[in-house]
Length: 258
Image (cartoon, rainbow, N blue to C red):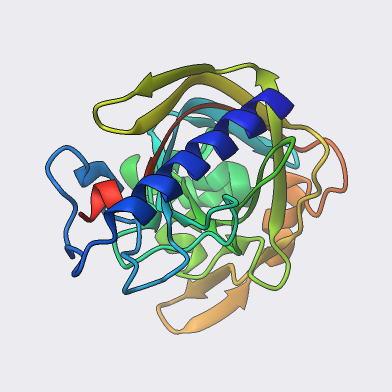
């Protein structure tokens, strides 16, 4: 992983040096052709420290919280900007972690234990989604990527604010290299591509659910956090894990916004 860190820093230094030589009088506000995938990266006007643009894609893997394991079947895309030391992540309105709903095996009955729901809901309404959201600033470290998250459980039965983790008490992923990625440099575009990396964390803790509310008869709200926690085995200090197959792109912000 130190090799990865060295490569990333070298790329960042090269990007910053190129920007310093160019010193444009007025920076474009939309990505240049060929760099539209970095639209979530702030311009220098939005954040003067945003000197390196990042796009990271988790292509597959899984996230296990307590005894519930959710496959990552839809790509998770994180975009934003970093400073010259690849720290201080920031994003504009188009950046951050795109909300993508993954399907949770067992559905809403599996997460609540309320078998009688099958008599009131059709097959589609019994499905349970999980959306991973950023709950703090990501950090690239010598070992990998630190990523604080919260997970929203999506089903009308659970209400609109059913979460595992929060901004005050996030799930703190410390993703470390399990399989070394490949580095591909593109001199013409200035983009450094990092592919086929596998990152994992099997030591993090998971908090209990909050905000899960069952509304009876359309107007009587009842908290079911206890049911969700009992069925999912939360909170859990151990036994949680994630494995993520990840690709990444880095480029100087002057290339994106010439």
